Image (tube, rainbow, N blue to C red; front, side):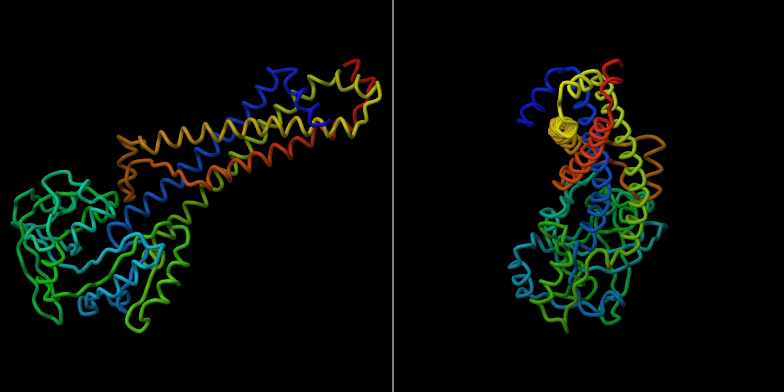
Length: 406
């Protein structure tokens, strides 16, 4: 009966109900949008770095990370590939040979990161071929050509079809020198990588460094990135721990992880202020409802309505209106996030330069992870319910005569 009374009451004054539900709607929409934006920026930043370099997890020879030398590489092992792909949480694996070299063109020389890659696997994982801004992507694992980061090409002042000379140290102190045709230029979201990377076919890299059939690492791309430690443990159980070690991107790129954690602290403060503003907005709306109905509440108490039953009805009304607002807010949040997921915001002008100075891609992506919608909606709903106790408290202290004459 109380539920029915509360439902009928909220629609007796549709205008008041719509105003209150709208305030909840905008609170949910604002919370979802802000959280989706911040998480989307972090996820994109991580993806831009790890997908083009280490992967979310990386398998390497034990001790390689402490001394990243071409001498600490390991032989390709098809059995290792098969064991990794048997894991249901592993989506793709990417074999790579990584080393360093001096890159030269005419009178320009620069130290570069050389990544020997399998072109087909890179296409399937990070769509590297779609990042080509000039020329073409590498097609075969033994093609005598390279792809350069756009920033590196600018520093060396070379373009497509120019010849790049690489000079470094090969396997077991052998000399490593070769020249390659620049087949394409690629623009990466990780600015530091964009200014230093040379992608070379895996077979060509192995030949140049005298490391035939050897790899520095196997990068792993999981189906979900939420439980990397759990995936790491499951992989460690299937490989030889004396020969291989597994590391997550947080262990390999600790500076990036620390930067994100520090930046998240600032965003938590901002979203806390946002919730305070939301709370005051909801509280003001509830006060408006209470004062509009003060005369009505006084008459109900005067004719015998129990105060505690009236307080329960007011609480139920607030909860129902909050649920309506939250449901509408979820739908609105899904539509907004979906739109900006398809059409991300591209920054221009001075703001773009500021982002690039920090090594961050100047595009604002939104995250569509389910927990964002659930958590933010629940927080706003809980705030609404807690604030709804105030009208009940005021009813318990209400004096019928004063209320009727108000």
